[in-house]
Amino acid sequence: MGILEKIADIEAEMARTQKNKATEYHLGLLKAKLAKYRTMLLEPASKSGAKGPGFDVVRSGDARVALIGFPSVGKSTFLSKVTGTTSEVAAYEFTTLTCVPGKIHYNGSAIQLLDLPGIIEGASQGKGRGRQVIAVAKTADLILMMLDATKGPRQRELLEIELEAVGIRINTSKPDIYFKVKKGGGISFNATCKLTYLNEKLVQQILQTYKIHNAEVLIREDYTVDDFIDVVLGNRKYIRCVYCYNKIDQISLEEVDKLAREPYTVAISCEADLNMDYIIEYLWKNLDLIRVYTKRRGEYPDFEGGLILKNGSTVEEICRSIHKTLVDDFNYALLWGTSTKHSPQRVGLQHVVDDEDVIQVVKKR
Image (cartoon, rainbow, N blue to C red; front, side, top):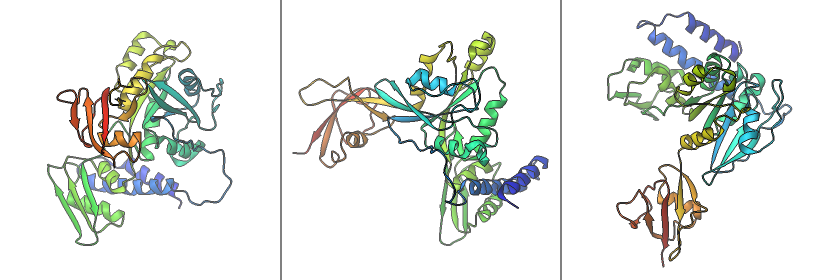
């Protein structure tokens, strides 16, 4: 029996098993086995065989956004509109057959946008080159899920299922569970709160499924079996996802208003140029980037070419982005902006900067 057949059998057993207190333990073990087989499915079986057109694109710019969706929802049109990059557009499905990169320039930053081929149901199992498409999505800082506003919510559900199956967790944070494999001592299990989904026996059985017999587990919140399995596997990717509904010029205003009020959602029309500026601004906001301006001694700040960094960056990260040896020569920095108590403030390497701060680095003599 192949891996796909084993996955199908487990999914069928889970579907016919009633969910109640008596079956929670059994379902938890099935979920652990399912996650194990799905992980095995994603691993390449061999390195031989003919290779098709590659999906590897050199990472460039300050952030990477992966554009995914079903065929013919307007991904290539969107790329052409916001980046000026020409991606083949046609009225039939599967126009784009490989990864097409483009650049969005906004607020002094360069955001790399990847137009990926349309994925189909079963992509996580390798259908329609879906495995390569979703593998590229794992390298992104943000996923832009392009959806057709004229179709129902099922398209979004199917895409979320495919992303979930390959270990991409969207719009959620990593579970606060401490897990460490040890060389001996058995399973040490502790929890700092009341647990409704997990218990010591279930945790031990799940770990035995992965042939782990010695480990330390500390659970700090009431997490589910799926959350614990994600921590054990350790290969999950937690990415922000923005849902972009295209073709809103073909639906009523009431439907547009309903879509636009959903969380992490933007409604646009590529053909009618509706909301195209707002979607770029929304992407910038959700990428959580900041700008920091540099200043030389005795000169005005350079407001033309600021540094683009992730929110929460420190002075040390700024120094490394300027030059890799600057940290070794660092003495102190003078900072102007909202992250300081007074301007200028003398700060060290571990000071966290805010958006539009101005920094002057003073080197050792």
